[in-house]
Image (cartoon, rainbow, N blue to C red; front, side, top):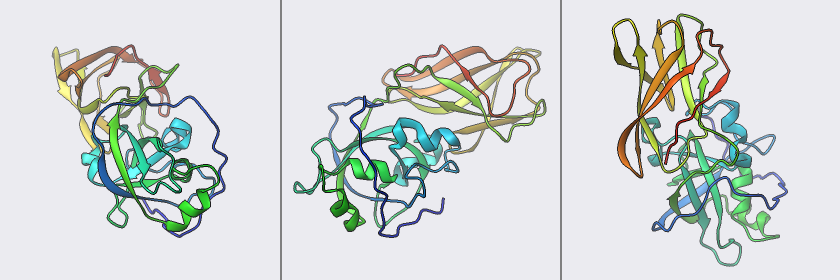
Length: 250
């Protein structure tokens, strides 16, 4: 994804906001984290998960690229609490991030956006944290929460009506991982698997006409389940448009 690992940082103003994710009591894992350069101090819209602009700004731009936790795309959309371990400069709770990209650093699990990296610091110690470039951290998986948002299915921008459909799930709540996506083929009365094109993007050539129903194979707190979204995409769908669903992910 072309991360810039230069030792420079953006001056960010960290406001006290309601977090987009909540805490869990799972154990912490030791690792390392760094940050990437960004001209506007936000995430990148061209991330390997395929989230587009959503991946740049979701969770107040507290986002990250990961390597080992990417899991061939199933790790996209996962939320983690990440905190650095130097007590002189590191805040107790660290930062809650959303995985939106793939990235490899200097033996790191996380390449954080500038706002996310800054939020790991105690007040007035951000410059010191950025000066390190790479820091020891500990992290744990936590449930994602998006107050005021339902899970959405976005028709990816590269889709071409009516011959090629690519979708990506936004506002994926809980600790869920989407393993596969099926599309309902009305004429033969069966579910047909979509292809994982890359990251969190699933696609299909010559999709069914009419309203489109999907089902998702999800691994979450309830184990391995199928979650259906009937008629979630309208007959005359448009590339770049996100459609709300009533599905619940945990």
